[in-house]
Length: 235
Image 1 (cartoon, one colour):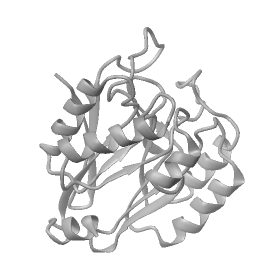
Image 2 (image 1 turned 45 degrees about the horizontal axis):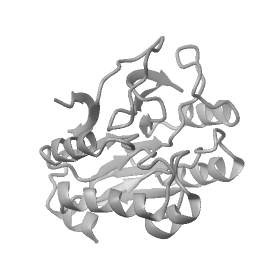
Image 3 (image 1 turned 135 degrees about the horizontal axis):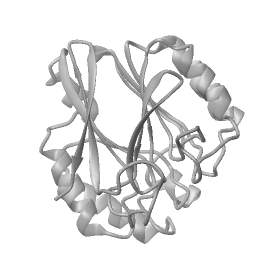
């Protein structure tokens, strides 16, 4: 309902949403991430997972309170991370895989659950069912990034090749979002722009062969059918 109300007030040819991930362990940074995101008046916020350290009820309640206090009125959708407790997540947050669809804007975000470091046939089948009805601005999100020539370590391999094939064959997919690694990076996967956004509070990586070690959010703007991506550093 909250998303429907915002969508009715949103310009069809110019809107944005915000992506962030890995906010555990530092409420001050997460608070800044939420407030910075709210400043863009996004249609919604997509959280890439690991909002908690152990995923218990207390941590989950704190996460939800932080969201309500610092991004009031903005729908927030959460992809499950490997630090979440599946039972608590399902009860307090929502299903582990889902599709956010806004027909008026021609927008869809399909979220999958690879929080255990693999993409099972259940999720691949779910994506396969969602893509035929996907509009021109479709995005796919999950927690763990796939292993590629650029992304090595802290990645997944089981199901990655199938995912790449599906994305490459789907002309409506415009971007992919991952988290898990505590940094920012932009690459290409299946011929589509792909991003790791894991800098919303968790301890940043000490070193990496790719990406930027920076607290940030990612602003995704769709304007007149064109999609642009802006990494915004949290200061």
